[in-house]
Structure formats: structure tokens, C-alpha cells
Image (cartoon, rainbow, N blue to C red; front, side, top):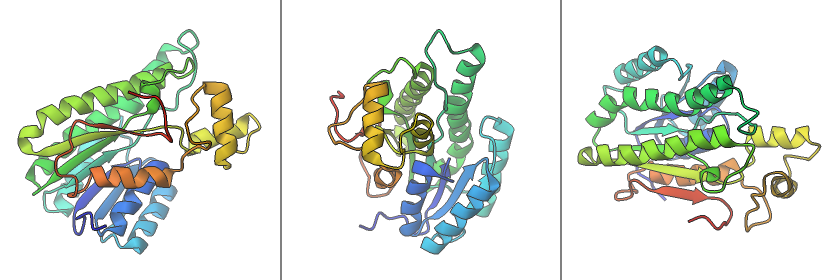
Length: 265
């Protein structure tokens, strides 16, 4: 399907790996100019080369710490000059890697969850908005999580941060409706991300086996899906891409679960 990304300018924050990279690849396949932002130069260079091979003109990787607002402002100012002052798509996929119960987590871990998972997204949205408003069409997609709807006692900080992302996104959809900038959220379920695979490996489970991974998730988190396996990043990318595309012309303020089946409401 032609999603209407040809020559569109897109930024994927956290696009060097996992679900962010999967989304960036979908945009590149459809002809978008894609910049991926992250912290690891080697990973970003590899991602940019892949996006260019897929057909993304001017694909590039940008190293930045999105917790630092000045760095973020500088990145988007440079992209504005490079792309003649316009930006069509902003996708935020960064999430805090914080695990522990409420009584176990330190104040610093709580602050880290908010800084990594919420303030970074807010910094990117603020810096991107002038460019998004100048574009012929614009979309924002933020990544939340299924744990905001099904709690786990060892993920309170992560879940709280993702709940804030969902709430802020809903608010943005209201704020930006007059500008016809559509804002939506994708809430993945148990996806074989680098962090989740690493966790499984640490407890002696083959995290690369999606069936074994789902069994471990069921045992340790109590979050089984209706399907008997964990999802893959490449199964999230197309959903993000649709919401970020011109094909999505009337969906805004939505929270889309991609979870392998659940009892979410």
C-alpha cells in the first residue's frame, strides 16, 4: 500500500533499533526522508545505511541525548535548515528501562523513568512543532505500553512514565486538532525487544524464541497474550507507519493496542 510518504520528512526518536527502527524501515520503504535519533553512533550509522538502501533519500542518524533540551533544540534547528523548514512526521519510541517494585525503586530511578520516558518526548515535541505546523500535513505517533492497562508489580515506574506519555498524547491531540496535526499512541504488548530478550536470557530463557519468551512473561509478569508467542518489532512498525501516514486522515487521540490479544478495554 502506498502510504503517501514519498519525499515526506520524518524523525524517529529511538530509531536505531527495535520498534523504532522497524517503523523507520516502513517509512523508508515508502520513500520518506528519515532521520533517526539515538545515543549510539555505530547503531545509528548502521540504521541510516539500511534506510538508504531501502529507498530513503537523505537518510541520516543523529546522536543526541533527548533528556537535554538544548541538544534537542539544536537537532531540530539543523533538520529545519536541511529540510527547508518542514517536518511531516515525528515518532517517539524511547522508553525507560526501569524495573523494581514501588518499595525497591530509588528516587533516582523514578526520576530516570520520567526523564527518559516522558521529558525526552516532550522536548522533541516542543522542538518539532514549529516545523510540523509549517508542513502541508503532519502526524505525531508516541509509543506507550500495554502495562498502563494491565499492571505488573515490578514495573511501576515504567508504567507510570508510559501512562504519562499516553495522557500527554491525548492532550496534544486536542491542542493540535485546530492545526490538523494528528496525534496517536501505539501500545505494544509483549514484544521481543532488546531489553525483553536480554531479561529472558538473564533468567536462562532463550529470548530469541518468541514462544519461550511468552511462557517466561506469563510466569514472571502474569501478562500472557491470547496468541502463544511474543510479538516482534517488525509487527509494530507497520502500525506506527500507518498512523504516521497521509493514509491516516481522521484518526487522532487514539491508543492502539498491538498485543497479541488481551482483555484490555
